[in-house]
Amino acid sequence: MWLKWVIISFLLCGISDTTWKMAGEMGKESVNAYLLFFHFFALLSAVIVFFLQRKKITKTEFILGTTAGATLIAGGICSMNAILVLPGIVFFPVASCGNLLTVTILANIFWKEKPAKRQIYGLIVSCIAIILIALG
Image (tube, rainbow, N blue to C red; front, side, top):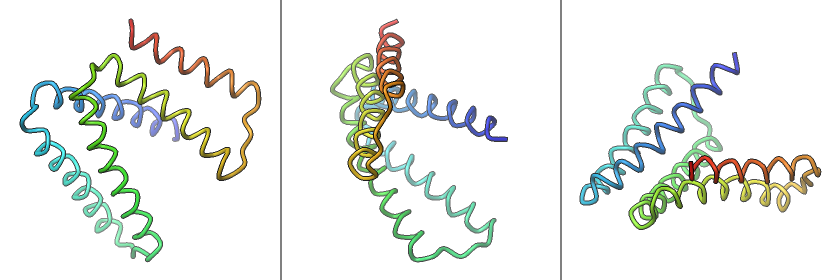
């Protein structure tokens, strides 16, 4: 069951990155409209799922969801501005490796998770692989 969701997530993340780059390259003057549509569609999808499930949203869920949504929108705006300035071959490896390293560092700071040597080697190999894929 989980493999299906991992594959769907993998494909949708790739589609998302591709559409971000396409919007940055082809629609320079309409990028803000694209961002607005992109986030409005995500909000509309979440509202539809919410009503179909007929569950109540708690105050904590609302606050966490609003915070996550606001940070995703801010990140999307920053990413789009970076895509407009940087070539994709630079942006995508930096963004991907940056995400991996940021999560690892924050987990170490906030939850005191110490990565083992094997995990550190895995991070290094992952970053090298991301860079090589972008170059190739």
